[in-house]
Amino acid sequence: MIGSPVTARSNVNVALVKYWGKRDPELNLPATGSLSLTLDGLWVEAEVGFGDRDADQVTIDGEPAQGVERDRVVRFLDLIRAQARCDGSARVVTRSRVPRGAGLASSAAAFAALALAGSRAAGLRLEPPALSALARRGSGSAARSIFGGFVEWRRGERPDGSDSIAEPLLEPGAWDLRVVVAITSLAPKAISSRDGMARAADSPFYPAWVAGVDADLAEARAAIRARDLPRLGHLAEHSALAMHAVGLAARPPLLYWRGATVECVHRVWALRADGTPAFVTIDAGPQVKVLCEPADAGRVADALAAVPGVERIVTCAPGGGAEVVAA
Ligand code: DP6
Image 1 (cartoon, rainbow, N blue to C red):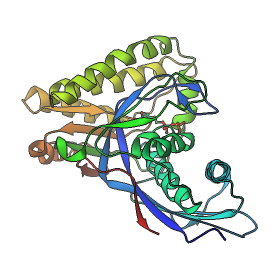
Image 2: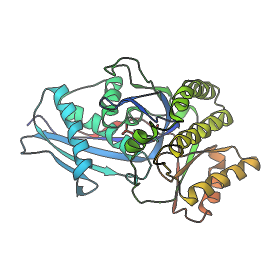
Image 3: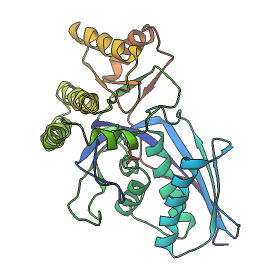
């Protein structure tokens, strides 16, 4: 027995400059940098304890994990065991306040929480950059969920990935915005981000996508420094639509949108034409996330709720980084 279990909680994040492609799938190293906002209120909690069991026990939202999902967690535990030089079996229990596998970044929150809880439970005390590098191995976007507010994940140059870590750009309290999430389907998506990214890498548009991201990052950083919502919003919309365009041109094609997804985009554009600064972004799923001012969040939520096919609306403020909640 190594010690008592540790529970950590981590929020999801929404990418404003997307991560969509890998330069090393084994080490989970991205082809480009990316930039996100961590969101309050949509989180995953992970409890991890190491002991003398026969095998790892993994429970996700009350159900024993199976298949690919369990393998991914066990492989991640192996990384922690190797770093901590421990060989105990783990008991892992995760609870999420975010629908899993539906393009709401639950894996980002889950692996960030697992990195923090798991490393502490194994006796490691990792600083945030090392935690970010560890979380990245579970899910790339998890590297960003270690931190709160606006976060940039650097591509890094080294083949071992030691410089491919996220860093905070702006504290959550430093710029008050809202992200209104329109959930158009709670069904798990048919193609994971991981598989989608692999397919997109063969798209004829992929090289153009990769070539454009550095300029997008520079523009996003400048917009954040200036607290310029329209500048950041237009850039985030461009990044999301360009990412989806890469998939559309792949063979076989990749299309995460439902009809309601497209209709939500048009509603937001109509709001904008009427003078409300609101901007869409879409990840590897059918949900639409809208960046806007706090004072406009109610109007945006009402407009999206009226779209046929929208099942639920969640409004999030900027959120904090991963934290230990029980030890
Ligand atoms: C569209 O981080 O889930 O949300 O590293 O393979 O686990 P893996 O992928 P993941 O991909 C996220 C893709 C995205 C864009 C983003 O979050 O930047």
